[in-house]
Length: 474
Ligand code: AMP
Image (cartoon, protein in one colour):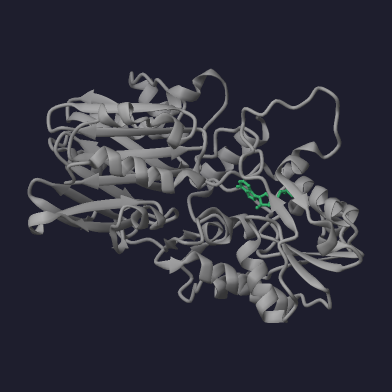
């Protein structure tokens, strides 16, 4: 993924939970490993042995944080995990998840994917009434609401707390003897449920943001945790309940466009299938007579395959990505033009020389990366560069858990498509239409959120306006 600027609205995360497995922490580690693409700055696992909750979290990648010793220090048959792209500065580790606390409902840990849009208002109320917050993350608000609830059981307190939240949340909770997961009533972010068969007909339940986490641990995908649903797995077995009345569903279209792994099922649909169809429809709407279809790796690969299949133009991986570009890389002090992109991508000259190239990527945000890549392809000898983008122009920030900058930095919010073409220096540009995006994600019942493409936010506008203001003034 490209470098991202820091702000507090981007809770790009992956969550995982497991109940009833003798190696719960180990499987949580593997699950997070598969979900690493959803967040690379911090990761954590909390486990329970029935008496204590053990938690380890740190900055960095899952594979570096969870050494065999660390995983070995997380006993018990139930665990939750989290991987996150988090905020900058010295508060970072404090914001890493899971959060684990002791309160009047017992010991609990929580991990969250999404963004609670009324967290600011809830936090102000809670602080006025004496609550003390340790982190700046919106997730902590949930723990305060749970602790303050008059309900006696954790499930009852959670129900009460969740009903006060607005926005996007796929949540996994760990108590001493149970795992509880819940999804917001719109179902913005994904949360899948699976099972693992153990010896003696025992079943272990697993939950993950994406099904690629199940594949790694040989779990079988069962279904989605439904929007507005809470699932409890404990000593008495598994139970599912609706804690909130159904709302219009608003699954994040961007999960299918970019964010999720193509080998996952997200909202019950194959991401690869959506992306290939995005590419096919892109060709139908914006055909070219180019010589080669070249993806921007990795984000444009599946759509480029679709574009090539539909057009009959040969597909060539003419840009090669270095997968080992890390945060620790020290840039040389002298200014080297386009260094950031060169570090990540390198063209194969002979595939591009003299050619008319269709360059396919999933989205343009600020336009700066796309401009550098178009230049790179041209400098490698391409005669023409036709940029094709497998979603509509990104015109509004996301407040439901995807990292987008504020409106003033979104190139499509402030420029016409032709102005964008000129900025990125492409010979032609084509964005997918909204209707085709709907077809590609199989949204026949109007169950997706397209706010980043339309500016129509499915939740309370007052909170969205507050968040917009906060983002613009940052
Ligand atoms: P730019 O041309 O600078 O707007 O960058 C576009 C690139 O950013 C595309 O390759 C996208 O795949 C990628 N991108 C889009 N959205 C995100 C996001 N939320 N996080 C990280 N990368 C993204």
